[in-house]
Amino acid sequence: MTEMSRSVIFEAFDAFPQACAVVDADLRILQTNPALCSLAGRSAKALTGLGFNTFGSTLVLSARACPPAVPSPDCPA
Image 1 (cartoon, rainbow, N blue to C red):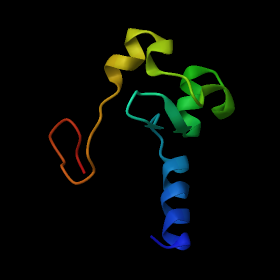
Image 2: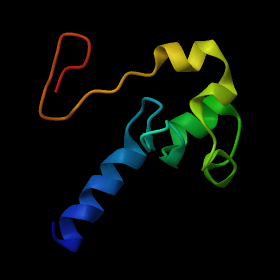
Image 3: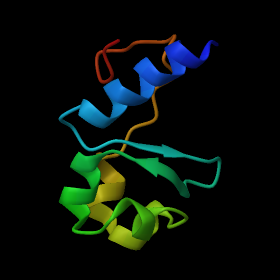
């Protein structure tokens, strides 16, 4: 992936109006977008490293993992 394509992906991620996070295999937050920070009422720095279980069942239940190459009715491409 070129540096330019990475830049475009991160710009789109930041501009996405829905709350999003990049998480690791243990569901610890690696990166957030501004919409998630607003929803959680915390800064991106404060959210980084936290697990989704930190926020209680509401946020956890609304989070869905969707492989980008496998769209579904619940997670369209």
